Length: 507
Image 1 (cartoon, rainbow, N blue to C red):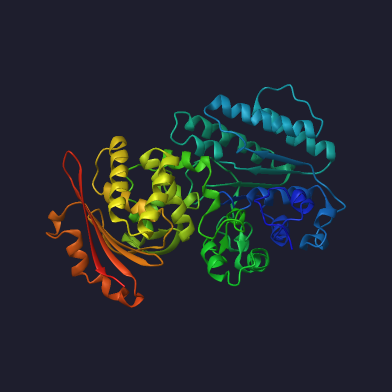
Image 2: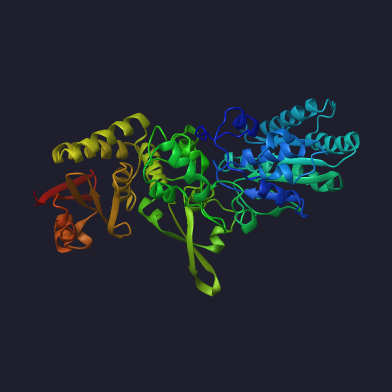
């Protein structure tokens, strides 16, 4: 049995540690013989882009012994090796153009030392050009260039004052590749933004975007057929089909794939978390890109016109899509023959993880938000409605201390709270920024919850509307205690939330 995948980015380390590895060298072989020579692959973080780049490097360096038993072993000429320039622009954050220059210099210096090449030139463009030309002449072969996170410096500074200068610098830097194309055998770059949905606006002359190319749709990520045999043997689970289907929710014009890093803690932990999400970097990204006024129930199934999606402006939906928090669920016709793209969460795990992080941002304290969620789960399981009301009083107090009222904000806040509990939330019905009705089912009790900002728009309070909609009838056969819970926010100063509850059925 192979050890679990740990999100490894080095093929040699994976082999040395006897870790699980999915053979992607058949796709690598297809890429190596593709006459287009310059490629861009965009995928969210955690899909194994760095590992694929590492695999390409080892192939071009003719490390044949590492590929024994893999497809490429018998389908590549190992008698010839090529000099490989490898750059990673995601290793550190660049706050301004000086930081960008320093990052490029360090990356170039690393490659110069590798090939025992010294440059006295302080200009990074000249150094890059000289490195390509001189390596080609020294080794009497063309050069391979591999670049990881080509757009990270721009995305990390998207809301900053230096983004335009960083973008222009990178455009000039990548232009060196086109200027020296006669010396380049292959250039392969990875990042977050594709040329179709391009928010980085970095100029890439002569590059072919294979992000939505069906031939390369499985180059990063695990398909269901690839991960299921390992999962069954490693987890000892009798039925992992549901879990695999939940995780294999990403698709780029080919088979559905899952994010490999999602399985890094799967054996010891559970199937209900997107483990890549619980990193400090994600907390910072959400804080910068997602406004506190974001109406989160919209994210369950949101529609975006293709003109908005393909524009260079960053938006909440575009940010969440590029980073793999939302996926494309389909299209429908828009005005003037345009398309509307429908987005939603790829899985319950990602939705739960997003809401957990967003809740901590809304109340301003990660540890305290975790404590509140634990208390709320206990109160729900123990049918302690008074304690539940007290917990929400704390949440409202913390929220109002940080944020000003905007239409729908309290409905969104409460939805985020319940969706962050990992209890199998079901949305019964909703009317945007007016109300949302939810259902939460536990082992011994079932809650039907209505959240609305003011009864004035409908003339009825939350409990009355739940009764009128006869929600309880379809759950009677479950023979569980059924509680109706209502939240009615009064849009006045000071803020007031009317909490109400009613037991509908007791077994």
